[in-house]
Length: 478
Image 1 (cartoon, helix red, strand yellow):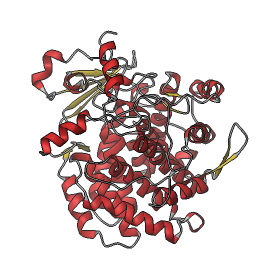
Image 2 (cartoon, rainbow, N blue to C red):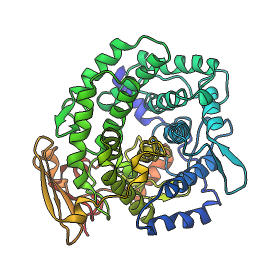
Image 3 (cartoon, rainbow, N blue to C red):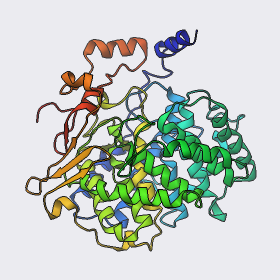
Image 4 (cartoon, rainbow, N blue to C red):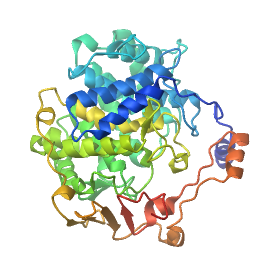
């Protein structure tokens, strides 16, 4: 019976799948203005504020009438419009909250004239989204539910807001938030990195007055068991290694130790430092040696380097350079358009997405901005000059033996490659050079079935011996 239900779920039409959100007219000019950023040799604090203003314009353009979600243009995933609009809110909210509580910016004057107030937007959305009587209620977290994923960012947002007397949530909102978040402790979750969502939610619930020590310790012990070495974690005990280490594993390790600071601090700081020391060699001025799933989050690639600068301020100059290099490169190559990040790598290429990814998913790309704006305005990160990347200084070969990667940088060409010493999915190697895109017939089937049918492409994403910064894996020939 459970297999039958699972099959029905996989075949069931997705709510709002064929609904199309049109790009707001304001971005015909705002997109051109944003491109000017990529022409700068270095990004200043004001440039990142300008970049955030751009995303705020997107929030304003696409927010739902109730104000508890943001439904962006783009192709849908398997979750439905209600959850995709929740993603649109949750995945941008921590960046806004960090910007607010660290004193960078509290309001933005929109291109259309009105003033966007971060505090009012966030507190109202959380109040309405967690209120079961509200039309904007997010819905309860259920078994294997994407809401459990978004609960992590909502929990971080609430914790950030509660750090400041002027931005704290009301007692009634806190009460509703506690009920909504605590649902994650009473439902089935997927394995692997999903344990981090419950871990971070329970840290915030503890801060809100619930006794969650035992669950926190158990979940952290499980996650720690995913550690492979060189600062890298698998997505589960036997899980794959990929850029989820950048925009998920280390991101939540950082928030964990911020919210629950007296537990495993030495392991966390050492792991973050070790990862950053090897990971800095992945960065060039012309892209990343991308591999693995969820490449659409590419703008968040520098997140762990910024995190390391929180622990080790001397690392701020190199993290600053990597961060600006990533954003500059991808803005230049149309990764930011229409008030959001595009569903692809360079420009829009939805075949790159996993089927679970939808219109709001790409906003995990903002996680590097979130960590950057968590630096106070007087932090060395904002005051220092960026250092040169390793690739700007010379060629290199770095062996991350425990992670199974050899990183080579060619100073003359600027190319960086990652060689896997033992690629996974050996049985797929015959297909490893083929990235499959949907045929016209398959796209028609999607329209009729109202479900995404994008190819998994595991071989192209994980099984190649080498990946290159100047040749994204979905391009089979240079």
